Amino acid sequence: MYWCKLKLLTAIALIGSILFSGMACRPDIKQIKYFDIKRYFNGDISRLKKLNKSVFKTVTINGVTESKKIKIDNWEQELNLFTGSDINSPAWKNSYTITDNDEFLIYKAKDPGLKMREMIIRRDKEQVKWILIFNSTKNMLYQTTEKLSYFPDSLYLIEKTQRVRLIGTNTYKIQGVIEH
Image (cartoon, rainbow, N blue to C red; front, side, top):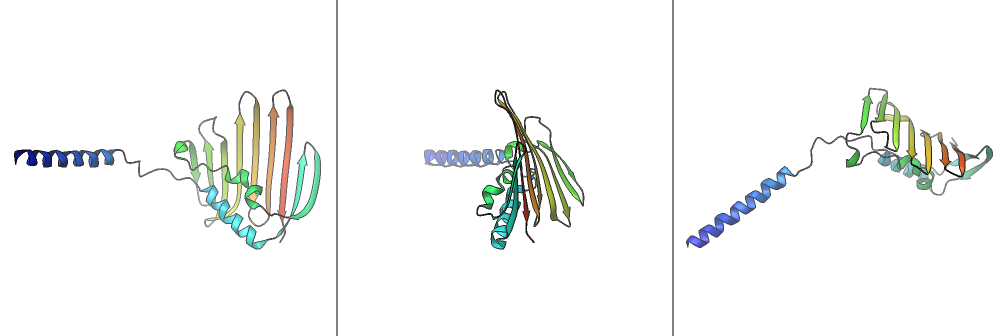
């Protein structure tokens, strides 16, 4: 009888310690949540697919330009640099300063090693008017800078400079004007 009570008390103590230790390991509930750029663009990609509008696309590589009117079959690929600028990772929880007012939402990287350096979102009553993103990557072999501009329903612009050691510098500009 004594052993049964001892086993029961030990089991209760073990269960209690597991529950309390689990509560201590819970993540901070007040985690910072940045603007969900990936969700925003996935929604806009769905919208653009349904509209199926033509785009007057201009591509410039190292000063050589080509333009034509096309239908975009793969909006995910077309806007992947924008969705790839998402900063909602637990690892980047406190990595950006935030300026937030009625008109602008601005994120600036605190750490110079972060790819997404700055994001400016112009809005009117929570509706996005335009998004501007500055990305930068640098290591011993190459340096890449990107300026991404997005104006819903009218224009997207990707400006990229890539310096590769021993190869040189390449510049790219992709502009898509969405027909009205």
